[in-house]
Each structure stands twice: as C-alpha cells, then as structure tokens.
Image (cartoon, rainbow over all chains, first blue to last red; front, side):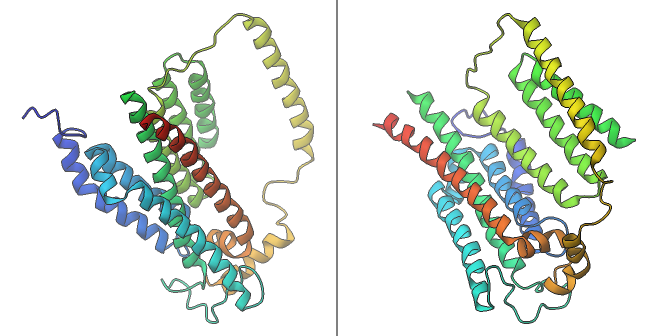
Length: 150
Length: 173
C-alpha cells in the first residue's frame, strides 16, 4: 500500500473525513439559518462552513478541495455576499431609511421564517465570511507552494 | 472562582507563548489562551461570543500552523535585557496605577442599564421579531456597525489576495 504519489494524509484520516465533513457543513448551515433564534449567527456559521472546506483540503490535498470550490469561485461568492448585504440595507429605503426592517409582518417568534431582514443579513454575512476566509487560506497555501518550486 | 483560575491559566499560557523558543510550541500556547478565552465567555454567559471565538481560534491556529510555521523567522535575542526588563516593569507599574484610579470611578458592571440598551432589551423582540437579542442588535439596531465590519473584512481579503497574487505571477514567469 505504498502510494507516495497520492496527496493528503493517511487512509484513516481520509475515511474519518469522508464521514464528518458533511456533518460539519450541515452544522454550519444550521447555525446560519437559526442565527435569529439561537446563539450563533452569520459570522460563526460562515467560519464553520469555511472550516469544512479547510478540513477537506487538509485531508485530501489541494486539488480535491479546489475542485469543490476554486479560489475564483470563492472570491466571486465573497463579493456576492457583500453586495447582498448592501442591497438588503439599501432596500430599507422602501420603508424610509437605511437598514429599515421592511417586512410588514415579523412572523411569530421562534419560527424559522421570522424576524424580517435578519435571516437575509445572516446569509449574506455567512457567504462573505466563509468564502473570504477560505480564499485567504487557499492564497497562503498556494503562495507557499509557489515559493518552494523556485 | 473558575473565572480567576481561567484568567491565571491564560496569563501563564501567554507568558509561555512569549518566552518559549520553539515556534510550534508558541503557537500551541496561543491556542490555549484562545480556548481559555472561549471558556471565559461561556462562564460570563455570552454563548454567541463563545461560539465565534472557538471557531475563529481553530481557523487561525490551522492557518498559523499550516501556512506560516515553515518560514524562517529570525529571533532577536541581543543584550540589554536588564534595560528591557526594567522599562517593561516600569510601564506595567504606570499602567496599573492609572488603571486603579480609572477603574475606581466606573459604575458597577451592568448596573445601571443605560437608557438605549434598556430599550433594546425591553422592545427588541416586539420590534424585530428575532428571539436572539444579539442578532437583533447587530443586524437591525446596529446595522451600520456590522456594515463597517463587513467592509473591513472585505478590504482585508482583497488586500491579501492582491499582494499574494502579484508575487505569484512574477514567480510564475
């Protein structure tokens, strides 16, 4: 079983990662979507989602993770998150001022679809933070490899 | 009581992180400080902050170990340690004296609740419909602040990508 060409860590780590990485991603999405009900929110959930991709990259090597989410895509997602947050804020002018909570009915408390613009803002911040931190991680790793080739 | 034990542990870990010679051990000691801070937030009943601190600490540890630990960082350990130690102690003393005078004047922690935050606590649920009050404050009442933070993070990511990609292209030629 000597296979030095295969990137990443050993078989044990890869098997465990295959089982856990989906759970970590799901937990991040749960934290983001329930940000207005339970502790957590866009920032923490976004970092957990970024950590699931980092986990994939540490275990399986660079190529597998970049196939799922390349650096260009991460940059685009990050800008998309920023634009979404800003446009939600600008849509508040429908009701009169910046960041106005423009939904007429706030919904019942402890419901998933409640609290007006707050879940939308959480999703935007999650996109921004998760994609941004993953892009920084990828950039640092790629830079290190480029320097080694020199 | 647990709070003081945790604070003592964090101070000891910080001293270890500064003084130890091995870079990897230093990074691990910094991680110990961060996880102690996470437990402190839990004891002070701030679960939002505790979750964020935990995940950011893990991500920054991974980035430190994986991406920067292999670089050769020169350690500056020249003489004049007597002067350095004495000036450090002097400034710590100054800081403690002024902090004593300043902290004596402060009102007790969390009491009285200020006028604006009282309104947030009383009417937050009925005005925004969000049961997590922290979320309601940072995304609705204080949306401007969150927009500023998002801008800071955006600028930081763009800066890192721009600087690193420039060097990568020159090397690639």
